[in-house]
Amino acid sequence: LDLFLNNRFADALALLRPWKDQSMYHATGYSSILVMQAGMTFEPKDMDAAMTSLGESLQTCQRFRKKTGIVESLTNLWYRQPVENLTEEEMHAELCYAEVLLQKAALTFLDESIISFIKGGMRIRNSYQIFNQKSTHVHFRGGVSMGIGSFNLMLSLLPARVLRLMEFLGFSGDREVGLSELREGAASSSLRSILSTLTLLMYHLYITVILGIGDGNLTEAETLLEPYKQKFPNGALILFYTARIAVLKGNFTFAQEKFLACIASQEEWRQIHHLCYWELMWAYSFEQNWREAYRYADLLCKESKWSQAIYVYQKAAILSMLPEEEVTKLRENVVELFRQVDGLKLRIAGKSIPTEKFAAKKAQRYSSSNPVKLVVPALVRARKHCEPTSIFLKKSHVLCKENN
Image (tube, rainbow, N blue to C red; front, side):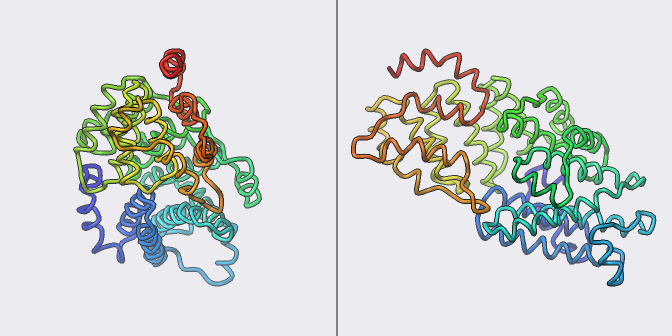
């Protein structure tokens, strides 16, 4: 954990690797880092490596779990064995096994087949039942809080259609219970307290903003982050979340400084750079500094594979805010960029991504031989992005005047 939070990602993996086939915690930690990397790159090779590692981790954890007969195993598919029947080592194994199952389910949901989606749901159910074994042992409490909290929070945020499927599998999600458990986990000194903290930060600083549910708590986010800022002042993740809080508070100059510091802090995981590019693009857009915003949109188009449709649309929208002579100097063609958007869309779990569908729909105006230009495209994009758009709305009359 110390190596990882100090940006020494390869060293963290190297430390875990020799023991990942012998220790459940080394196995879980090793596969967790690969899962995070896969989630940031979206590269097939990284996804395959993460899935392979998760499978190996399950095998390692399985060796430490309580051995059961066939009848007992069938019974335990829906009703877990009592906690008191497990040794301390077996309980650790159950907790690690559940965490790996959850991560494997999350990656499974990125597969395009409905069969994989159902398999993922069953894995989540299996993990949920394991986490529901609330142990009185202090060493497990942090892990149980993180698990129960994450499940409840995640399920409470699912769309109605997906939630009905989860309810069919026997789930329900209580957001307040989830947040309460995660807060308890974050406040503890357990191995998993940082995971509870990062989950809460993601909820307050991204999920509440993107979904528009208005429950984000910047004060709590700052409090959660403070001890890690003192211990890991140059940690990329710590710098990133510090900058994100500044963006949501409208302190764009400070945010830009911290995002640049985050980029400079490490070169090993370029994916973190891409997250910073995205945030810097918006921070400069909020200031109407279109030239700098274009710079980071262009970098995303060249380096990141997360969503080329959104990146290209965003680049074209920002260029639309610049004078035509400056666009010409940059050797860019706004119309051609908009025309590329539809062909760049991705499909996850057989479905199009809503923001990509939005971008493609707006870009359709440029598909004809006589394209109809968007009106103030950067403002429209910001509102769809669900960022703190009051900043844009206050200046909208100025933007409209500048762009007729």
